[in-house]
Amino acid sequence: AQTVTQSQPEMSVQEAETVTLSCTYDTSENNYYLFWYKQPPSRQMILVIRQEAYKQQNATENRFSVNFQKAAKSFSLKISDSQLGDTAMYFCAFAYTDKLIFGTGTRLQVFP
Amino acid sequence: EPEVTQTPSHQVTQMGQEVILRCVPISNHLYFYWYRQILGQKVEFLVSFYNNEISEKSEIFDDQFSVERPDGSNFTLKIRSTKLEDSAMYFCASAGPPKTSGGSYNEQFFGPGTRLTVL
Image (cartoon, rainbow over all chains, first blue to last red; front, side, top):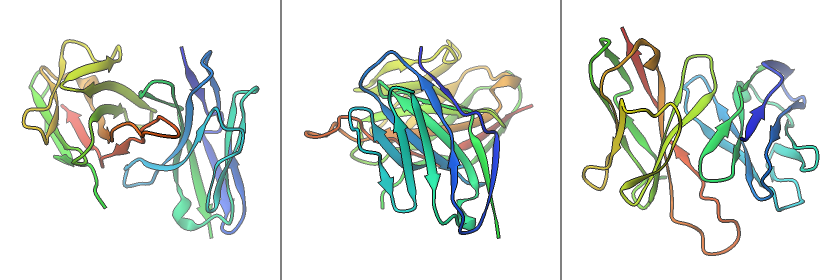
């Protein structure tokens, strides 16, 4: 069975600084997808970034980038130039079929 | 920009009552999902639905749960006899048809959720 682990329940960062959120997963599959979702206080789930396992190049979306280490089954999210609006829960997720499997989340607080 | 909508935003019900949570997926999407999130916990998959039938369901999705696409636009989740432990945020998601080239994963777009409180 696939599992997703986020070992950091809470993180904080000062505005304009960089923060990295960790995620590890376990699977025996070779082709799969990994995601980071943001859940602000409004509770809506917003896709931040995704990575296809067959791609070696790390995905980047503006200030958000990932460090995908397939052999280590690690998928961390780096947020550069943190903004107050980045304050939210961040969920790492895995998909092999179309079912998303989520981690327990990391609560990120950005301080001014 | 098209979005998934859900109604109601908050539903309060008595234990043992039936509830129906409603979702309007993005109009050209073919794949539909329900997830739930108990307060303070992770988001959990409940069920996926395609071509008018369930394609996958989790252990949580027992006989008390059912899904339906009654009229080609709405996608509903029914809980027949609610329990206290059904209190959670329920998210609907939809995804479009498969891409013809490149990656085959269809991004799921989430609705804003329905908060269900069972008393």
